[in-house]
Image (cartoon, rainbow, N blue to C red; front, top):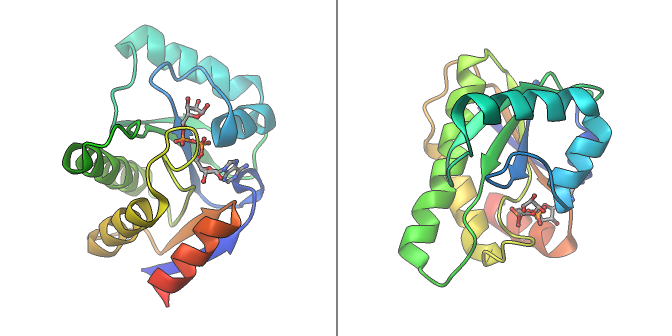
Length: 168
Ligand code: AR6
């Protein structure tokens, strides 16, 4: 499995699956979530609403999938990152769950290429260095069958520098 780092807007990435840093409502918000819903259009929101009606809110660390509407990707995997509250152990486990559950979903969808944003490092204030380490560890430890490439899509300079160092 190849691991790549790109500085970009994730809505422009032609992956099989892009991951959204959603909130538990699944109904959109700001940051990367807002960008994905704006670019994906109403199909993404409608499918999120159907999931809400079926299963209620999405718990932190869990992931659900919709198609990608007008985006160049095939699927959007919506995962809910932890809101940083200083409880490093608990928040780290939850963030690791986001990456692992998203990889599992991508795998079950036969996705070959999956793109991740830097989950929880914006509005949710997870310290960026720690978040990047968790993301890279989870992806590297994942036993992939179908996934051939994971793309870390950094949006801000700070995350890009951190991932560059980590990935060498
Ligand atoms: N493409 C890729 N990455 C982006 C983009 C983009 N278009 N826009 C922002 N980022 P955040 P969170 C980066 O705040 O911390 C939302 O309102 C950004 O630089 O989007 O998980 C949700 O609805 C940062 O590194 O997500 C939730 O309520 C990373 O994406 C809440 O924010 C994550 O920042 C989730 O907070």
